[in-house]
Length: 442
Ligand code: ATP
Ligand code: MG
Image (cartoon, rainbow, N blue to C red; front, top):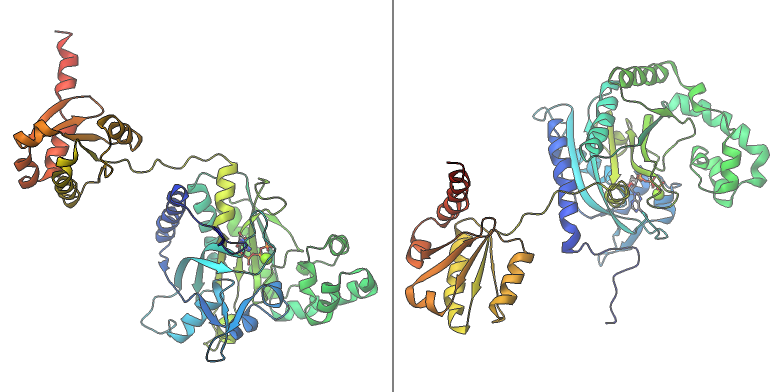
């Protein structure tokens, strides 16, 4: 076939979708313990929302946007990340109003789009699960939200994760640091990559985020932002560390970590895996505080904190750590219909079973009984009903409980008129096998 999926995208096939559902289900359970409610925003937004909030000099905006002009000549973009759209929704829907609880906490699980060079763990369409908290500048919010991410990973059974934190300070801290960083980088400007050279004056902190090998060698000895924090930012960061200690959450500090998005201030963090499941990339979750963004997008001054985690990278890490996913639901009933003349009755039977609330499957290809039994076994059916010429004549069906091998007849009238789920449960929990076992001892 001539059609292929777009580069950097993936089909999530039925064989894998249970894993996605499981991860999302655990997220919903853990997030609800923290009182987060789900939010869903459009897949595309005005381009300017992202250029304004994520930042013109960020890789995301300068290189990775899926942007286009629609038929009304509006500049649109497929969303590259979740925070800016949610901030837009927060402002547009006045979610800061008095009728809403504070802090206002939401989570999302949605696809994101970035025009990147596809490789393991780096795709053009990928999925993020993330949270945002609006309206608290309490360091406890920073710590609880990081703890939430760790709880989620622990609940999935992941180990060997490292929480890395840093502080980008407030505006005052960053201005002071900016000066120091420019003074450090300027004498070596020739040695920097082209990208970093253009960023040096526009947004020098961006240089610290460079993935270029030569840049990284220079960055290694750069001054530390932690030495330039204002009094209030220093205090905030100290409290975050104390609170993490109090919860026995271990962490490391990387003063060169800046994150790829412009809107952060004070606490930022990444959660890394030691697994080399996707080459050299090891970050599965990242986030931080963004106190200025709501105002930037047109809302009232509102402190905020959030994170996003990559579901594809998470799944690769789960696989690398050989974490078992719970078994999928097995089939309740398989109906074996023998001979074409049973076609209609078989149809009625599976529909009756399904409307009683159980799952049912059957054969549609008029296959031999043996082939049908094989399918029933493959689907791990708990019960196999068999309808042959004989049964059809007697208006009954053969009921076999697969675990015990016990067989009995059920009249079609009972099957249709009684509550089938009741019959099913009665026969499945039949104590005869149990009783017979004990009879031997008498
Ligand atoms: P990186 O440094 O790996 O490019 P980033 O800083 O661009 O990551 P964020 O924007 O903070 O990443 O996104 C948060 C998380 O989303 C990442 O930690 C990662 O798990 C996931 N992620 C980001 N970009 C991609 C992508 N192109 N493909 C798959 N997952 C991604
Ligand atoms: Mg990136």
